[in-house]
Length: 455
Image 1 (cartoon, rainbow, N blue to C red):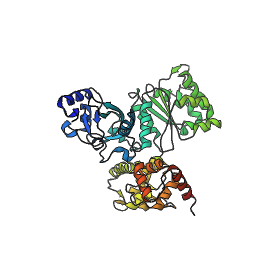
Image 2 (image 1 turned 90 degrees about the vertical axis):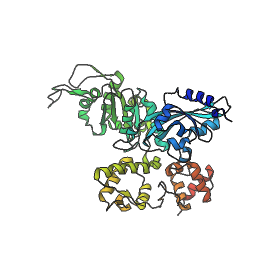
Image 3 (image 1 turned 120 degrees about the vertical axis):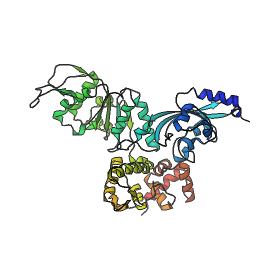
Image 4 (image 1 turned 30 degrees about the vertical axis):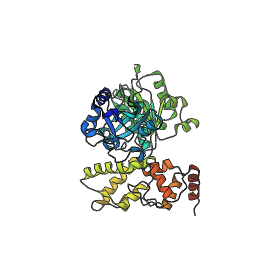
């Protein structure tokens, strides 16, 4: 009999984990919860007698199988296999069923009974309301998105400049707001400027402000963005579009920490958290002389790459659900996607990312007849290869030809294939074996080449 079943020993274990300020839980090898502190019970809205013996993934993930089978990193695997501490980011559901991002630190706990358990401490990274933003770009559970959230959470605690890199429409401004809302300057203002829309002749005036009479037509004093963002965060979106001459002026302010308004004599001091964003390859721009190297190293102290929607296809169903709910509410509709519309949507590459997805759905809701959105309502062209089920919620009907198309797209990389489908590598492995594919890394590579050479 395990000592955990002895009342006095269980009370000792309980008192130890109750010392944790954040939710903490003790889990056995079979994923069963054996002890949970008050913060954990409060977070997930479950009484102790209803919690002990339940599976951890059932309580926090609302799933009936372990999270690693759904493509997420799982501390349980690492701790029991290697007795190593592991830190991951997950999507959990609170006591009201609302999703939230949490950081989990899993570590091995060896009790006097000789048994090893998984000890998990859980820290909220983004509350439910942060995942219900207007643009909905942070909705999802895919590994690439959770990795980005983890990086943003760690960077938020530092005052160092951050460079957000990613394609247009991935949510760089939303990521910048996340840094602000979780940083030391959260009580200050958040100010954003799209540098691509800033005329060169107005650059200094917009950035640093101006005094009355500084130039023709100037009748009053104007504060610049560096003043407006004082004690807060300044986002310079599309910083790669700033002309070289203006880059030198920006660099001087960042290096000296001082500036003057146009036409002014008073020296002012900057007091901001700088976040820059770009959809360009700034390293290549530096190499070609289009961007100053010294400015690059000033703004890119911490660089975070935000994933495209193609890289996190598993999040598309969640994004569609969230976006449709908002669009329907705004239009008094109850529109939903037909199976054919789902198939067409899931095979689209989304060069415009989440912004494009939102626009597609807005158009479809406006143009569809009745409450069902058909494939033709989406306004998307059909692709040459039918890979309807690549990332759809139900992909059990995938046949050999479709798997070959998937291997071709991801060059035989099982991890990327599984992420695209929103399933675990183990599930994909079983499907490949069922259709007679060789599943070693080398053979998968040959399969991809063979698929790409088909007539």
